[in-house]
Amino acid sequence: MRILKKTLLFFLFAGVAAGVFYGVTCGLRAFTDDTEEARPRKSQKATPTVAAATPTASPVPNDAIPYTGSGEVLLLGDVHLPELIEKVLSSIVQVESDVTGYDDWGRQNVGSTQGSGIILALENDTLYIATNNHVVSDATKITVTFADGSTAEVSLLGADEVGDLAILTVPYDKLADTSKSAIAVATLAQDTEPHCGEMVFAVGNSLGRGTSVTVGYVSAVERVVETTVGPMELIQTDAAINPGNSGGALVNLRGEVIGINSAKYSARSVESMGFAIPVSQAIPILAELKKTEHFPTEEAGYLGVYITAVTTGMQEDFGWPRGVYVKAVVPGGSAEAAGILSGDIILSVNDIRVYETSQLINRVTSYRAGTVIQVRISREQDGNREEIVIPVTLMEREKLPEE
Image 1 (cartoon, rainbow, N blue to C red):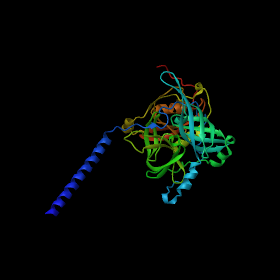
Image 2 (cartoon, one colour):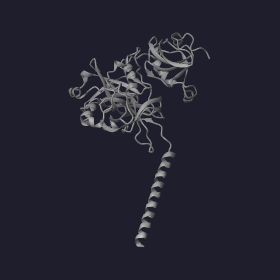
Image 3 (cartoon, rainbow, N blue to C red):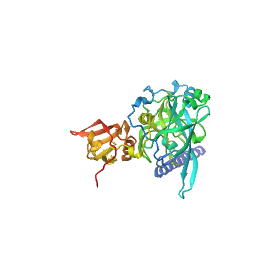
Image 4 (cartoon, rainbow, N blue to C red):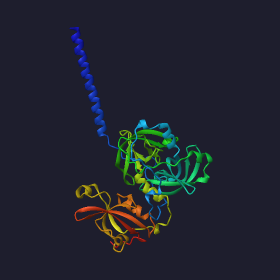
């Protein structure tokens, strides 16, 4: 009888415990599901401004930025991690930007932002460093710290607000000898596509405490994320990306940079959702920024089109690709002269994708009038859509007809 009672009490306790576990689990799930998902924000400054520098007035081929790529994914057992990380660390710098701003009462505030950078190239006695635009926008002074701990003041060569990318430069002969022996040019892996589930490392100046490494996996590729400058297709990772990591590298097991860390979700209900700009997307922008020139706003080129963004509804209803829809062309304008038609969907300018009207405007006006740009469009012909690349000579100024 005593054994029977103990048996009954055991099953009763087990049933209650299971019920409590189920209730807690469901309660947590309900709490999570009811919590509003936070929108991603940039890890440094929430709203970047247009940089003074603008890209070059001539198209630059993608191979202007050196890169390599094996196209294969390595396994963890094939890699000696300390050796790999040591090599990567020598190609990463810490970035500190002195920033001056004004509050709502017009009082001047002086502060600084922390970020990271990737040594992009050493050419013609000049060191080129890639970072995020939001790390250096509005900066009055920019200083980088190299792997050996030495520092150097750098110049902002060019910046692209929409792509959230910028290039910094410093004369090589102004670097300390210890810096010269400690630094290395990063390996950019344009041909190595990131794979979901692939192990990666996020390397950067986390919280401004110095360069460090976090480990995770590629959670998703081509993830569309809404930012303050429009939608971007990014790599999602669960490797920790904290404030200060912006502009740093997302690296695969070959030591190749597959992405430039840029943003993260920040909310108590969200964990381990960081994002990086794919190298394949960044290279065309960086290639143009490398040959930046400055010119007055009135000398900027214009396309001469009436445009609207292709919405999700348009994509679903008409099967259109994402891009910028041409509602009409300006008579006598550069678009009409080149053969762009109303109904065309503009996909890219000089291989740089555009999704919103602001993105297209920023791309076009970054070139001086008279520049020939390559515009990729999607055009419907005989019930089928095909992509066409059209060279367009930008006109001196947009001459819109009277409304």
